[in-house]
Amino acid sequence: MPIKEKGKRNVSAHCGGDVMAYTQAYAAYRETGVKTASQGKLIVMLYEEALRRLDSALSLYGKEDKIEAASIEKFHNNLVKTQEILTELMVSLDMERGGEIAQNLMALYSFFNRELMDISMSHDRKKLLSITTFMQELYTSWNAALSNTMAAENTPRAAAVDING
Image (cartoon, rainbow, N blue to C red; front, side, top):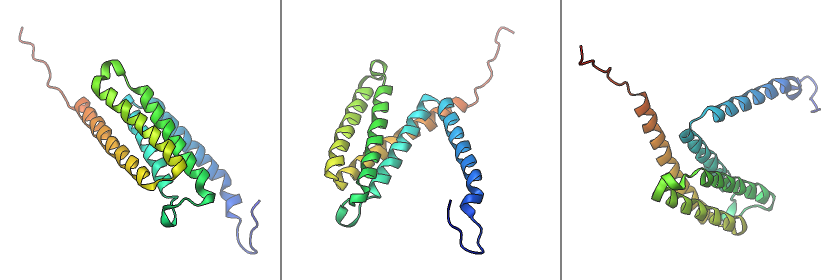
């Protein structure tokens, strides 16, 4: 239990239940969002999480583009989570129907995975920035495609006219 100073309320003890309830409600909300999302939305969500993890890894670089010893595990964990997301994106590809686009995405995801393995050991910030930029460009493309698809699905269609009378 946190120590409280004389005359001050123990805020963390007082709000603990509220914070936990909020955290659980938010987790349930996110889970529902994932379970009810379209395939396109799921792909966009995977990209968003991958970019969040890559940004988190980039934020751990200190002076002279070095990772502090205390941050190495967190850096590694962010890269591993990004690799898991890339693997999920690879599994989601329909190689038969996707044709050349699916083959190109598979090659890109494989390349990103190999680079992230190397970055995990070398801590090469320039390589990580490059992968992050590529992922951002792919995210932008997927997000635009999703927006266009949703707009097309929501466009009202003219009522059919019965020409038979």
